[in-house]
Length: 240
Ligand SMILES: Nc1ncnc2c1ncn2[C@@H]1O[C@H](COP(=O)(O)OP(=O)(O)OP(=O)(O)O)[C@@H](O)[C@H]1O
Ligand SMILES: [Mg+2]
Image (cartoon, rainbow, N blue to C red; front, side, top):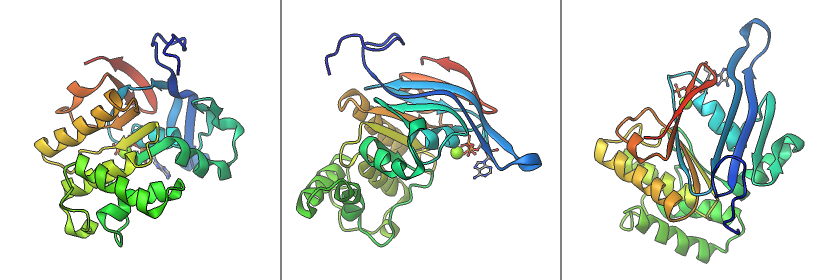
């Protein structure tokens, strides 16, 4: 990448993920839920953005749409140069694999795999050899402070340790965009802060775009930008 000004949104760094006029309605008729109502959102390379708002405001829905887990009912989503509206449902897994590392609300690690195997899994899916994926998984687990827990199953780890495995798995294979849904929800203040600092480091040192959904005001100071969402709309943006 050239580093020259390359987007109209005021940053010198390229926009990696962008939503325009995105709406999402679950169900139809009188049971329809309008989870998102015309959301515009973007984030650029190396940016650490937090999405905040009340329960039910549409945060997970927006993150899932940005992460190619869900398709919008209306509007467009762009990852790098790829416009998702022109893609079919069956293209979404390929896009996820190419661009996205996702930390789900509740982390969903594979229970039957140990920490190293969980972290290696996305790299194996990206075509890495078993030995290269395993070596890289070890190095990532060392980086999140779990170098001595490589062979532990999720059930043999604490909540904070599981969350750190989920962070290592999300960055495994080096996807440019990392999305995390409430990564500190089940953690004490110290562990929550260290998980968030790790995500921040992914943005500042690794150049990843990191978008984190959170209610946790103990970590707001680490964000480059906080986007507030209310009743399916972005209501304001702040720089802490
Ligand atoms: N699969 C679904 N079917 C029907 N309604 C849904 C579905 N998923 C979410 N909703 C509704 O859409 C709205 C937004 O949900 P969403 O999960 O995006 O909220 P959220 O901001 O992440 O909330 P929380 O902070 O509680 O996680 C809510 O009213 C929710 O009940
Ligand atoms: Mg949610």
